[in-house]
Image (cartoon, rainbow, N blue to C red):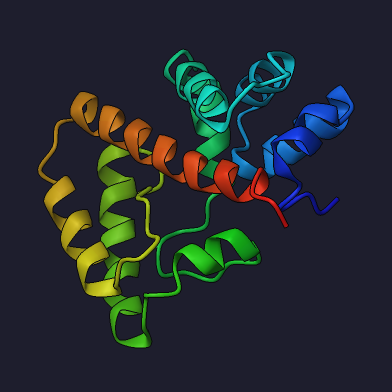
Length: 163
C-alpha cells in the first residue's frame, strides 16, 4: 500500500486496518499504530501529531524495541525509501566509522542507534553518535524516544501531505 501524500482527510477516511498499515510504515510499534489509528478522525495535522507524540510517550519496551528493529542502522544499507531519503546525507567516507560506532552503541545500550537523520550529513550523525555513547542507559533511552518522535512526525507529515 502506498499512502504517502493522501492528505489528512484521506487518512481520516481509511479503514481501521488500512490506517494501521499506513501508520506502521511510519513507526513499526503496533500499539502506537493502533492508538493513532483508533483516535481518528483528526481535525488538524497538529492534533494528529499531538496524539502520535502522546502515544509514543506511553509505549512500553516491547513496542519501542519493535520500532527500533524496523529502522536500518545509520549509514548501513536500507530497503526503506523513507530511511534512504532521511539518510541521504551520509556519504561513503562516513560509512565505516558509523558502522564501528553503531557496534559500540549496540554493545553499550543493547539496541540500535536511532537519530533523526533528515537534513544531516554523515559527519554530524557520527558526532552525535559519539556524544551519545557518554549517556547512561536511562538518559539514552529518553533521547532515543525523542529522536523516534521526530522521525514519526516527519513521516506522518509526509503521509498526510496533499499530493
